[in-house]
Image (tube, rainbow, N blue to C red; front, side):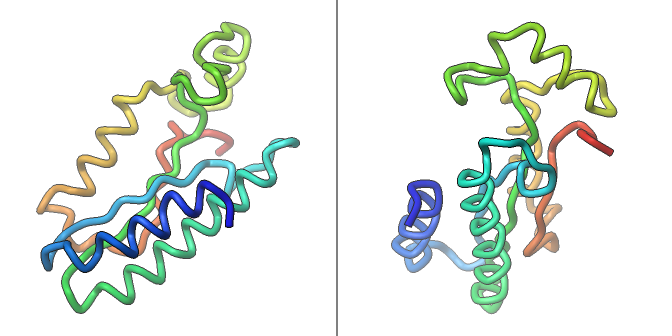
Length: 138
């Protein structure tokens, strides 16, 4: 089992019995489950598995009122892959040109999406893949 999936499946398995009814789980996937880049297949496949796990958990935990969703960011200016996006101005321009919002997101952009899914007002959102890519490759 890949480290990406193990980092979701096993902790969830251990923590769900400790969760209060009505809780929330937000898993992290990737835009790479919707669009393809050579060299990213193994990563994308594991993120796809996280999305399937999210749907199953949403169904299995629904009776307890626990909502389970996935946020799928596009390329983000972070330390991921050694800061490849953040530290390469040409790559940043290329990615920004592919988003409807015309920029590369930062971690706070993705954090805001996650926070909204944890808010009581979004309790009815369940079993969904929420893409947070700024409209990449529309």
